[in-house]
Length: 135
Image 1 (spheres, rainbow, N blue to C red):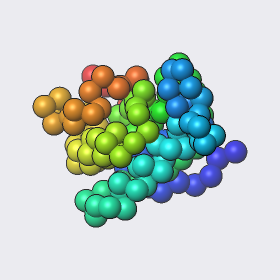
Image 2 (cartoon, helix red, strand yellow; image 1 turned 45 degrees about the vertical axis):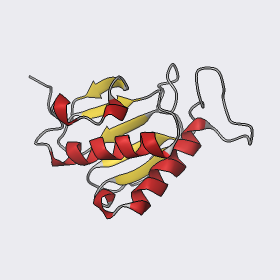
Image 3 (tube, helix red, strand yellow; image 1 turned 120 degrees about the vertical axis):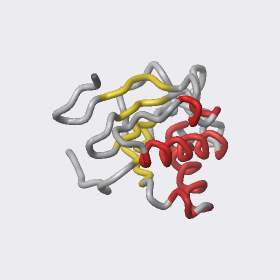
């Protein structure tokens, strides 16, 4: 079942993702994805610069060979799935910093020199927006 989401740039985190390659959840029984959602919301709330990027969650992005995955999306822009993050504030800040640059881009491509260090090596896929492909 689909539910309406916030229009505009968004980070959609998988709330059921594994904690790591080796562990499904932490000692308190929390999944890595749920912890990443908490970190994203905590970091977003700590800095008004992130207010224009929605943080949303859903079960399973079907990127199960990775862990702690997010989908970055915005109408009319290329989307990205990134994964293998540690579910902490440092990773959340890198994701949100990239999301801000992404939101400011023309069609979803952020120059590599503007990528936060914390997202480098975490990209899994890019998806074209409806009605377009990348040239």
